[in-house]
Image (cartoon, rainbow, N blue to C red; front, side):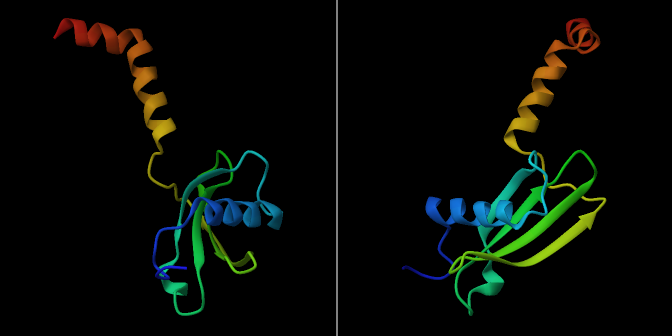
Length: 110
């Protein structure tokens, strides 16, 4: 293993996501916004921090997974919060604008 703060490997990301899904607190359609190394757990082994959008409500779940298990060691729900737009959301917004007649007309009128 390299440095404890090295970026997560694809295997670690897969294990962290699987651990959070196996925990049973998320619905099937949950969206994983961010999976990154948790720098605060560096002194106690490698940990992953995950930001998960459980559904259409304005909530975000912040989960920490100890990768040695792997097991979920922390779970915090942040009500009224959303992560930054992901690529898929940003792309969908761009497409929606270009398909909106009013937007297209406003651009043509410029």
